[in-house]
Image (cartoon, rainbow, N blue to C red; front, top):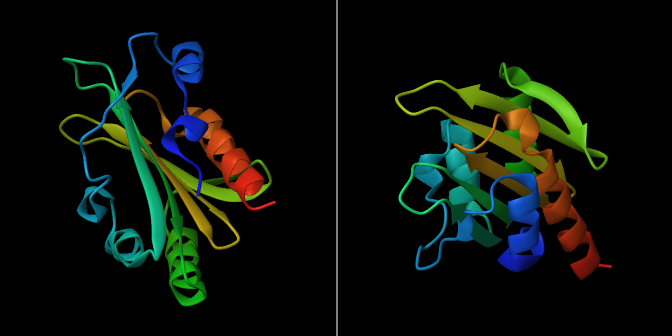
Length: 149
C-alpha cells in the first residue's frame, strides 16, 4: 500500500489545489459511514487492508480524503454492480474504471471511486468536483502500482 505522502505530498497539493493545504494527522481514517451508499460503506468496512489519508486547509471546511483499500473479489463485484446501477458518472482514470458524483447536501462534497484489480481508490472531499479528483486518483494508482511492481 502506498503511504499518504506518496498519494499526495505538499508540492502536489499546493500545485493542484491550494498552498494552504496540509496533511491532517491524528485521525483514524475515513469512517465507512462517511461514504454515500450502504454498499460502499459495507465494502470499506470489510476492506482487508487500507490506507486512509486526509488533507485540509486549517480553520476551514475545505479538505479531502484519499483512501486505497484492498477488496475481496465478492465485495468488489458487489460494489461494481451497485455503482453500475447508480446514477454516478462513469469514466476512466489511468486506465481504471471510475465512478463519481457531486453530493449536494448541507455543505456539499464530491466522491470518486476507482477500481483497479483488487484495489479501490476513494477520493472524497469539499475542495473540488468529482471530475477534478483525477490527479489524486492518478497519484494513488501510480504509487500503488509502483509498490506492487
